[in-house]
Image 1: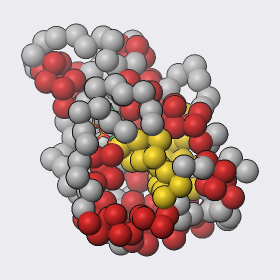
Image 2: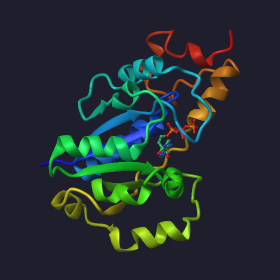
Image 3: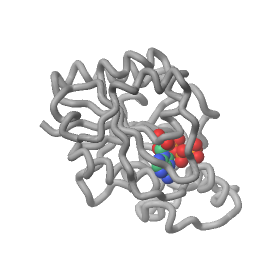
Image 4: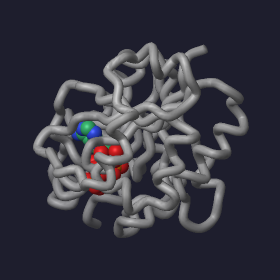
Length: 211
Ligand code: ATP
């Protein structure tokens, strides 16, 4: 059974950096990948686009392909969305099907501040995506937890439901939503940093443009 991989984020807005790494992760892991927009990111300022607008952008971005999908379950919950709770919910639905949480290396370095982070490995594997310009020092507690879990072999992730950590060397694309918000606020047109579907309806990028 193909693993299900989740790629969580604010997606404020979704950009080609997200889509490209999610796509390559799907290929490298031979997995179904779902983008999982977060309702209230516990560690970030609130998004400029509301939940509905971010989902509309994700749908516009994911047209004409069937490898990547959107999963809006965290947005249907009120209050902060803990990844651990989401993974437990999915684990209950999936039975023994492998589940992989995909994280950029910047997000991975911050893992020890997450709710019940050590228990994440009981419900999912972790796929760590390289990100250009970001080579964070991993905290000692994180190293200690992942040392025995690291593998370079995708087959190990297919063979069990959870518990392994794999690094995925994806093509580096130095694109961030922060930069895109800055460009749009300055009246610029970051056409080739964003999926073309986001330009089809002017309302989609309106939350980022200055009136
Ligand atoms: P912001 O600039 O607002 O912080 P972001 O571009 O980092 O946003 P998020 O929605 O916060 O996007 O990121 C969701 C996930 O995508 C995180 O795990 C992050 O590490 C990863 N990610 C975002 N952009 C890239 C990229 N260009 N390459 C690899 N991973 C990325």
